[in-house]
Image 1 (cartoon, protein in one colour):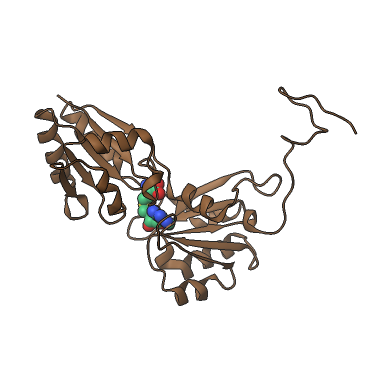
Image 2 (image 1 turned 135 degrees about the vertical axis):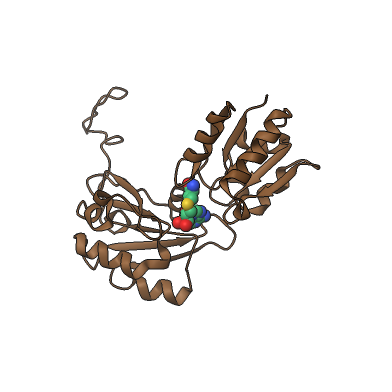
Length: 254
Ligand code: SAH
């Protein structure tokens, strides 16, 4: 019996899938892809005759049914999900169902959208002495978040944040971030469809981002990046500082 491959499709750009993911996709007999977010251009990599299922209209049971049918016939089944499957990928439940059926699976890493967005902006989340941590989170919506993970609690750290699945509630996001402790002048970038051909970026601060996002009409498929890492202040790292010795380089004094 074949195993199931969970493959991260990357954030959008069809060249941002890994070579391993690409090879599997091009050999697959069956591909179940997340049609609401995966760039359809990636399906061009599939061979003729490959069976394609869009999971947007399927239930968990239907997805597992397609997987188990395929595996039992020794077909190569790829489950293609956007970005990396470990971030809001709903992979746990699929994996648990497969375990119940004694079907093995393997995950292939992908480039998550928060990494695609950073590359598009050409920024670093961990600017020396400004921010050394990145919080990946979402605001509660129809899906709750644990009590201690409320946005306003995370905001107390005033570190870098990548907020998923929340742009439709941008007013509330801003309200909670301010309540938590970020100042009105904290920089924010909202990146819509990072790395897609129709990518759009809106930059501002917590005081004006709501109006800017509204006027661009961004309601989904966007990340809210917030924190001083986007600001004008920065420090050089010690890593390449010639007066700083480390394992691979002795300090040189002018
Ligand atoms: N596993 C995915 C996330 C899936 S959850 C990943 O690693 O990126 C879906 C959410 O991810 C969207 O609501 C949006 O917040 C974000 N997202 C996915 N692709 C995106 C993209 N290309 N640009 C901006 N945000 C994206």
